[in-house]
Amino acid sequence: MHVARPDSLVSEILPAVSDYLDSPPRLVIGAEKVGAADGRTLDVFNPATGKKLAEVPCGGAHEIDLAVKRAREALGGDWGRMRPVERQRIMLRLADLIEANGEELAQLETLNNGKSVMLSRLVEVGNSSNYLRYMAGWATKIEGSTIDVSIAVPPGAKYQAYTRKEPVGVVGAITPWNFPLNMAIWKIAPALACGNTVVLKPAEETPLTSLRLGELCLEAGLPPGVVNVVTGTGAEAGAALTSHPGVNKLTFTGSTEVGKIIGIQAMQDMKRVTLELGGKAPMIMFDDMDMDQLAMAAGVGVLFNSGQTCCAGTRIYAQKGIYDQVCEVMARTVGGMAIGSGLDPANAINPMVSAKHQAHVNACVASGLDQGATPLLSSDAYQGDGFFVTPQIFTDVRQDMKIMQDEVFGPVFTITPFDDPDDAIRMANDTRYGLGASIWTTNLNTMHRYVPQIQAGTVWVNAHNLPDANMPFGGYKQSGIGREHGRAALDAYLETKSVCVAVR
Image (cartoon, rainbow, N blue to C red; front, side, top):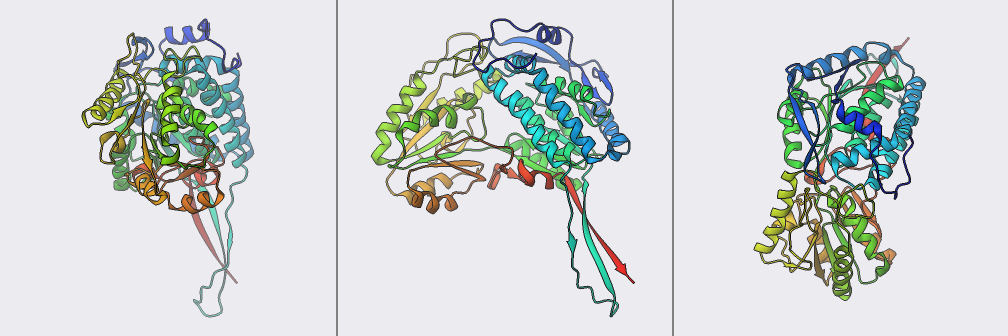
């Protein structure tokens, strides 16, 4: 079944989704769909109800080792000998299969992650299939270059030189819980385009669509072992994957704290590594901005996916001429957002992914109150089942407050006035993060003057939190290493080999 209209209510769970949840999902290792060897499982919860949704295998070092072996065998098998156009064809089939099973995947994602089914349909399914098609196009366009060399030994000798781009090998991919299917595709698609194999370890909170994706990879015609999916905890499966000697590259999206651990392990083994980590994005609003964009700035820039995005614009700096109006519009807009299950697209604020994360966000709100920030909205806790958090906006904040420096990853943000634009830039850069930022102005001179001064991997102008497959994405400072998307992403999955030929 193809995906339903994005804004349509889920009045009934598809039989395919119910059947999938009732028959325990399995690891995908090589051609096999198996449980953990020791029989252990992880409970998976529905964030909207707080109730157990399913069980998945709790894989560990044994399962990771087996998956890496299958991935390495695939490199030396049919996959390693496959022509680029054949890799492209299979990737396009996989994109078609994601769309053909789109509504099943969207409902499964919303049940497991809690997000709006509209986002599951548009982002998890729609963007994932489109991203696969985009990266499939690169499979036939990977190229080296010819080089003029000036080697003078022995005298009179001549040489021809060129470079080859070759797959890096087995890729260990660890994905976060906020966009489970989409982040898996962000890792898998460029890896496949370049001819690599993958062992995917999804977040333990949201493993269901990744396991289903592993099944679809086999159905699409990928040789067994090209994509393997092992669920488990970060402490066991994740650690085993990052330290495995058979893994050539690690790609991780998640917290800066975990990213540092993975980065250290990668350097010990000299594994190639891409890290897309935390963020604390500023949104700098000048007096001359188009005030009609404020509602969009709140809904997309700040509270997209209920604020559970690494680029959420949680630090708003508004010039004094519009500060009061920004506070008023933001409070009215956010205060009027419906809170509830993601199965109803009318609910703009959906649950946090887990009880643990709900507690973290609530603690961040409490710290803001304790440190003297002023709340613009009611501080009443959400009454009901599930892992919900009532949105909050703070004013009267200082740069050293936890809510200004630490990543909240929920529906909580701050608004701070400024007079001198240079002060706004200074405050915007006053963070250990540097993933995204935005400037809101109708003045081209203002835009061109201040974009180069912002320390962030992506700077949007009159927009925020909108990535694209062709636009490199990654961070400055402690927001990560390397870039995803576009041609830049391919370099992270390729080795460059120089070839020098003596000509007689």
